[in-house]
Image (cartoon, rainbow, N blue to C red; front, side, top):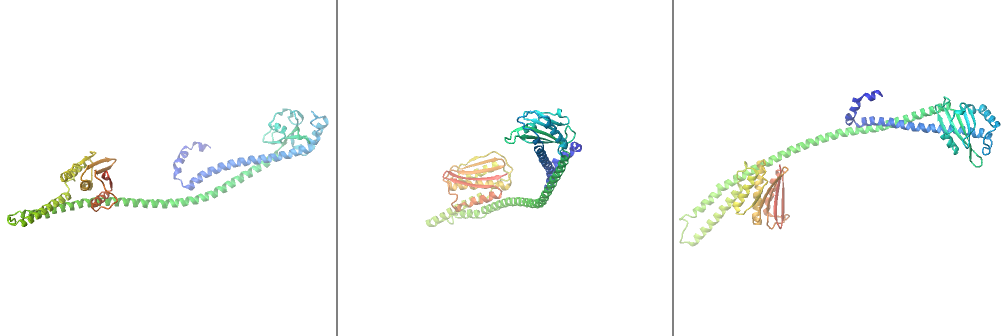
Length: 457
């Protein structure tokens, strides 16, 4: 007990090391404690039951002796308040000569009104007249108790036996016997030791069986835990590889977007420097005096028609070049990019566009800047072509690392599910935005159309 009460480090270390114990170790620790406590409690209950059973059996034997030997000596107790000398001598003779009487250390006979009619044995006058067992016997119950240490210095079996009227069953007297219980004590001790041994053996066997089951299950769980950790490690490696591949894919998409813009810029420059210049030169040559003959009106009309078509083609080529070639936006911030896209559209179409920005200066990658510019450019162009540029507006918000840009108009809208050959630009926008890990959404109703792009910064 001293080591348990002073070994504070060991007690403090148990809660910290418990979570790391295996299932079998935890069961052995907890199961041992529970089994010992259960064995102790069951042993106490069984011991009490055995002692009660043996005591009652011994009391029944003594009561049978009183009923068969002592009761016939007594007179009719309903008509007699005290015993005469002949009855007292008969009782004394019975106590001295009978086999059971020799083991009785103390005997007393009580009347129904709790008066002592007869007493035999040592210290008879010192006994208390009030006793719960006596009261129970007065009610017609046989009361038995075992006293390991009594006033006689040895274990005793105390029995209170009610004497009943044969015909009415009325309690007319109570016999109190104190019998020497040395043999009964040995029997009780043997029975208790056997019961404790049986309880301990059964508990130990039960614990061994449960331990075997738990240890087998613990080994299975440990094996499965190792396999599970291996699978988790493999999945973690795969997730890491997938994340790396996703990053590489996004970088490749950004490089492809930038490279595509370079190709578009190169194509615009070549269209401007090549076909556009040739068309312009052809238009100028048609105005030379050598080709213009005022005497032939039909020829002059044909040349004017050719020149008109060449001028129209030149305007279209220059418009294409303007759309293909991006302004210098690599060094521009987000508000400046939006302003440039809106102003370019206004100059090209002559329609006013409302612009609302959050004013946030974000560090965007070149591919993201190109994507924002192309989205606004394509959205405004579609709104001008299909909605007449009515109520066009661009809104930009930035919240919790999420950039959202909306391009809206107040046109008649269109059916999103219906196939539209001219929606090739929207398809390209969706692919461009999703390649950067963003989202693209189209909403349209009779009140207008809204295009939304979202980039996660």
